[in-house]
Length: 423
Picture: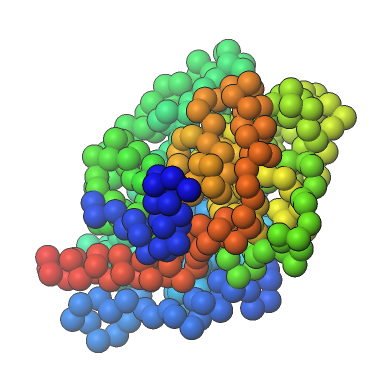
């Protein structure tokens, strides 16, 4: 084994290295919930004797995706907190979230808000600023859209866990509102609206006392668009639930590849479908979304759309797949880490969070460009890897729930202490 590969393996086996940047389904007693219960403590806000009164704010509660898994862990830490959100679809997120007192915005009462909430995007700045957060000592926003811009009370501390600055208002307008997505006329109408949102998003960044980024990649976006530093706190992956299958290392996996994803434009599932066609390998896709009809038209008979599946079914699919595919740029990407926790390699674009979670040539393959041909080559490379499920899993353990709890609480405590010192 060469020196570079040894260094990569050493980095994988040291789960504490490089974690901090200096600048719907419920599972009973899952590993993450148990870890939160056993290790959590409410941060002490400096000289205050009583625990702080906490408000949590999340953009919308319409499904259990990566951001909601982070919110769920935060909710376990702050069980008495009030949760504010733009819109909620009851039953769409876990009981750990819904057990909180939830206050919804005026968007909730607009026509078909549960399905069409994105159509009300131009209203978000106004309704976010209407949340009454007076009387809280600590405001924690979990934001990928607008809620990082809430107005806190004068004496409160605002910590924002930023999943990403608003993608469609900054660098991904065409993926959401380009002519190919909404038509040429509507795209022209949306462009000034998104430009105005971007100006508001940047102007309100100073309402946050401390930014937490979910990856070094997002920390760079926060610097670029908000001119703010941040602390990297990687999201919690339930490495207890997602684990090596009993057959790991004893039997060859199936010959099919797997995608677990919302079917939305920026995920670039079309690239993966065409790459699998070119490589003549079967593909399974777990997920639903507005791109489903178009993707079905692209897909051949070797592509199986499975819709949404339970966590247990997804864990089983991870364990049996040749590799999990990530053809688009993710801010962090929990799916690749869940797959690696099950001992399964990942083929991902060398961009975004995948550069931080996948070790090229050891726990998967990083593809140099977003093209069908490059991805097809990646599929061939991953099949030639010497697959070591234990090493792949060790890499995933760097992103465990315990690591998230420790880093998140330390960052919140620092923010509270800094605010208290300033007062």
